[in-house]
Length: 478
Image (cartoon, rainbow, N blue to C red; front, side, top):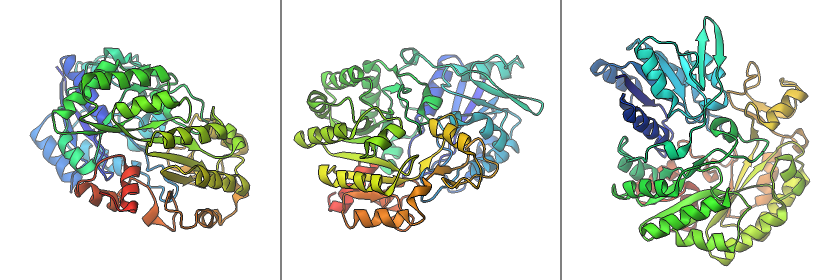
């Protein structure tokens, strides 16, 4: 039996529970290993907490999750890996156990993250099947180089095995008892639930296919219901579905909603989700409301058809308009997230987008300027063709020595000019529906990293998706 400690280094606030560690702990336990979780989210002194844990406990393997490499926010560009590297160096002082990295953020650029942090291994993709095998092998000094998804060293060279994508029906139903989920709810305002993993869309900027697979793997709806029910028993009644896009595939969204309704949970809970502009119709809108949906965040990206094609989106501006009409008809609170500044973006296309948003009037509009570039995406490939260098006028952020795109680097079309932030602010004017990710208006942004406005609102009792809490604050609702 291997003793495995799983470490959560994420200290973003509001606090988001590390759902992956609960899955991993459950998987380790089911295979006869002994898992522990060292959660540093609420640590006032993470180094002291690391020292204290390893003085009192031993470990055969240390798992270190990287949910996010940075805050993915052009206005701040906060890079987390330097702090994580210091955490790993601190762990090294107190244990000889090998350290393995994992997590959605890690899977985008695992070799670069492994090299930077100095850990021993990394796991690309799902870890539920891989981590128990690695724990058993390292405990017995056995060969590890054939383990699927493993990134490892031989001398100074790194090797990377193809990832394994788990059949989610084989993962045990979570009891959700490995973390202090009640505290996360009280300080984070919601609990996360997965109904599936992976995405088969071909958006040119998205890292989800690299981190979770390029096809949808569905959780049985009853598993989703069982997990929600386990959290309801802990006094948690507000949820965020962590799926890339809840309504793809449409049939699974229907099945999950029906399962929630049939279980009797719909009257006890509320939930929010990300969704694609299509497929979405009146029937799904009605069903989601019946199942307890309180709000939908649609990744609209743009109000210009040429830009939607540039970003690899499969819908049109007419679809954007139609989905808004459906939400208004069914009185669904909804947000459209915009992603501005990608290849081909002009001031004219941005103006068209802002004007469309004002016309169709979502409950809120999130405006992000600058497209975060991730390795293996269409935009990353375009940049490599253009030339990834400091002389490329379309690039912002960490360019020198960052060919892996591990540190934050953004695409911002040079056609927009140096004052594009001010131009967008002028277009939005004082319209309260817009959240603008602006360096000059940090009080009106919707960055969820160390957001004191959100933290205070949740402490006062507000619950829900962060964009909706911010909406209610602006409108003076509790």
